[in-house]
Length: 295
Image (cartoon, rainbow, N blue to C red; front, side, top):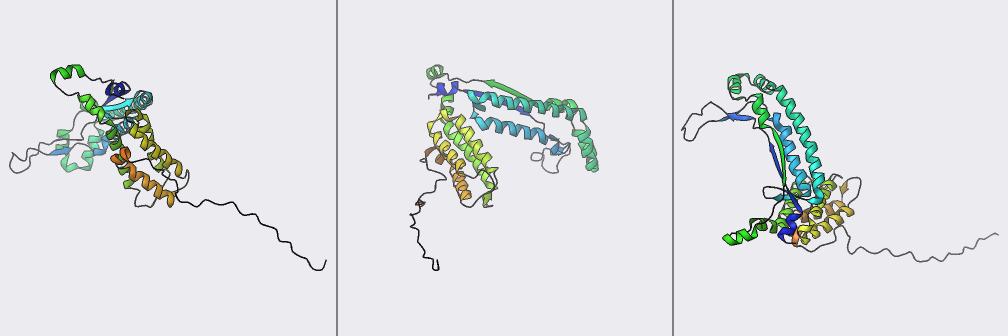
């Protein structure tokens, strides 16, 4: 496919989820050269106050990346996967707005709790704590959706390269790199254990869903689809993944951790046991007649 054919199938989701910083510039100066030491930041509430909103932003990014990839400063999601992604965003946005309303209604309770924990810094904390209106304005969840198109003719006239074409030409490597980064994070907490729980299959299926969704971008991505499907089918569907099955999982994750391997290595049969002796049917046994004495 060329750039235009690919971009026609993609929708750019621009997620604008803003969360306030729980710190502000303090009026307290640091002793020393003022050209170096301007001011220091201080927390006006527990940093965990805004943690649910920050976690929501990360979940929405993972949702978009589960079926799409980064493009033009947003997330490129194909037409077929767009309804499901937007539905997930809509549900999360409603939860975000409810949590925001609760926090704003309770403000400045988080500030008072912080003062109670640090009474010696009360004056400083109160001097930098924002109002409920500022918190309300600082918490926002906006979504914008658009299509992109090249301006090849106009760019050629001015001798400027088509920036969109350049980004699209590198999408396959970017998709592979995103999967590889997830694979490395996924494996970091599991490789030393020597075995894995069934939740490991969740990661494999997530990568498979992402790559299948974007398969039209570059046929080389079909290598990863074959590897993941074979690997998932080779693993047990219940109990711990250990022994030979863990070795299979380890080999699969190792392949998926390198974007160059994902795109350029030949497809291999993950999980297929080579050189395994074929069981032969048992030879026919001639019954031995025993002579019974005394009859």
